[in-house]
Length: 69
Image 1 (cartoon, rainbow, N blue to C red):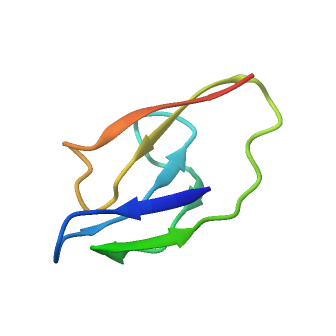
Image 2: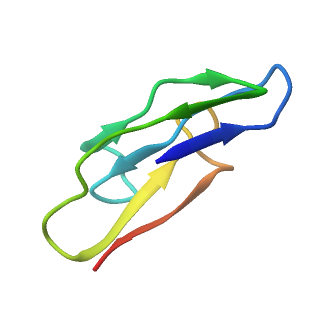
């Protein structure tokens, strides 16, 4: 997965968790300060379903669903 942070001087990352409690991570990407691009490599969960993702630096503002089919 290519991750592009276009926010000048602002750190972000991409992290996937089993659910929105963010107590058990599946993948935590390295924090990248923008502007910059990195490649994250990870294995998606084998079980289809909806998982939770967020930016760990901004855990309340930057969240979403990671869907495995």
